[in-house]
Length: 329
Length: 302
Image (cartoon, rainbow over all chains, first blue to last red; front, side):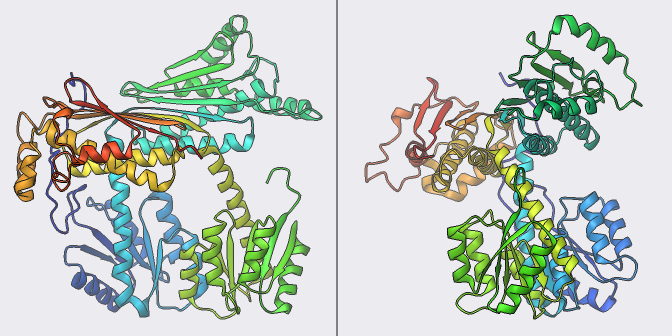
């Protein structure tokens, strides 16, 4: 009955041990980055006294810290860093970490009493700010809080690993703003599935964007040229001309994302008149098979390049494309 | 924002000169329509009367200071961002403000271009946030299939995961969602403990620790370790249906002790099922008793 489902090792009932993360099975690891040796000793000592189960690592500067983050086989859970350092200042470090490790939380500490630095670092993505004069009472609670929400995140990622299939349906209005937002949502869902590398996530998201924009321009705005044959600019201009004086009204656009062990399928449908699929499909496929990756050209080429299968319904107002799981793409 | 001719900004400061200074700056350098208030209380009155896109507030004010205003706006008008401004620099306040929900923090001596930049950045983020929320509300259906091993942590994490999915559909108010989460967790634990691991819940009455140890032991050896819990959850804006199937031999729910009988109230046996029935709109089993289906309908006033 359950044969083809994944089996996993080590899935036991579990009696929790103190100090060990049950999900990951390892101790919390903190990386401290500060160019002052005295400061490092103080902060590390503080953490080790109050939380003996933590693994505390340290680095003398931003570059050394970054190297540790990238190359340390044990994953680092939280970074604590001084804002002012000689080789790369705290802001650059924050920017770099949020670029390469967006899920790695950073707590900023600083000896300089500067409100602007505090607000800026929080705005730039630091999760908390502890002034050095409050280090003794403030640092460990701040780290505790972050570890707690990290654990919750890890748990929900763990659940996602056990999802064998998911089907989500969105119905938005014909609005460029909503399309942009839906594309971002799609990217987020693809990332949380954790089954595709970031390049695939990017290209699949781009294909969804193409399909949604096509639904908007051809379906809702009814620019009734054969879709995705020319560069988007042509259609945008046509749409602008059409829009002047006429209200596009509310034409719903539907996006379905269907995922299982075989692969992922996106289905986009609008309620426009569609196009004559029989007559033009040959033409479309002829162009699509002639894939020239240097040409920015047509949306359909992009969709073909990321998919194993592309289909239209007979009315011509619905496209679905599939990416198989084992395909390296 | 599409179709909008300008932004409505509320400037809150007890010093008239400051009100005039900031208002003048903003209205000269952007599409901003300014209103003013002298303290937090007045500010809240304004927010209640007219649509405001952004609040800029001083920290030290009589009646209600800036930090309290930040909290109140966060609670009562979560869509409206607040920027805290102050003459006295103190990073603790900046941090508190941000953590209490202020969108940003500015010094009163900040340069004009910095003030304008922050204001524009915050307004852009707000516009994007509003559309994001709008599109989240466009989710019509979310259907999941999961296959789970026998882990206590995984069961409670899955219950929370499904509850969050229902929350994304705005199925019912928070309080009800918490109870739904409890019902889900009970059902999942039952599927593991009584279904897959074949443990009689009467065992729990005697010694909780013995029960837990036995559960853990069995979960690591055959035939129990290979058994899985299969969950199907269909969630729409009107209804959530969750089906949980285990590989145990099943049971007869009719033979559970009556949980409303005062004698049985404190017994773990059957209490889980009672909670499932209380918190979900409908609960039923298949004939074997190894598959339970629970239904929660959207709240009437939603």
